[in-house]
Length: 241
Image 1 (cartoon, rainbow, N blue to C red):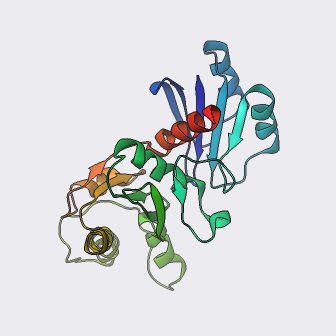
Image 2: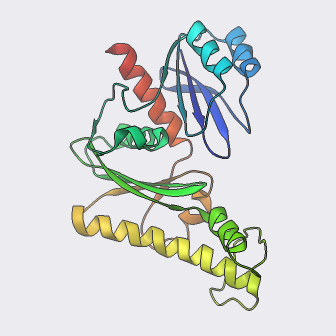
C-alpha cells in the first residue's frame, strides 16, 4: 500500500493507493505528521513518495524515512521514462510526475500536459516515453498579482470568469487580459506542439484546469491529481526495481 504526496506552492495533497485504487485523498494548506499517523492507524502503508516544490520540514522527512520505504522525487530518482531535460537538477518534481502519469494513461502516444496552478507549465512526452521538456509561465493569479505589484495604479483584483473580452472597466480589462490571454496562450502552445509532433493527447491538470477546459478551441481533457497518479507509478517502479 502506497502513500503519495504532492506539495505545491498553494496546496499540499496526499493519497492512499492500493493496487492503483485510490482509497483516500486529502488537500490541505499544510500536511502534518498527525495526518500521516492517522492514516497509519487505518492502513498498512509500506511505501511512500513525496514530490515537493517547497521546502519540507525536517521532522516530516525524518518521520517518513523512519516509518516507510520512502523516496523524495528528485533528479536522481529511478524513473519509468527517459528524461531528456538538460538541467534535471532544476526540474520541478511535479513536472516529472505529470508526464509519468500521462504516459501511464497513454503509453503509445505523444502527450502534452498543461499544468494550471500558481504557474502554467507545459510538459511533453513522446511516443517513445522520452520527456522532452516544455515551458513555464505565470498562472492566472500570479498575472493579476504582478500587474498590481509592478504598477502604480492598477488595483488588486480577484479572479473571476468574464464573458466579454472587451473590458469596460479597469478591473474587467485586467480580467480580460489575464483570462483570454491564458486561453490564447494555452491554445498557442498546443498548436506549436501539433505543428512539430503531429497528433497528440492534451491533458489539463491543476487547480485552474476546470476553468480552461471548455474555453480552449483545441480538444483537451481535464484530469485532476495527475501528479499523484504519476507519483504512484514512479513509486511502484522504484519498489519493483
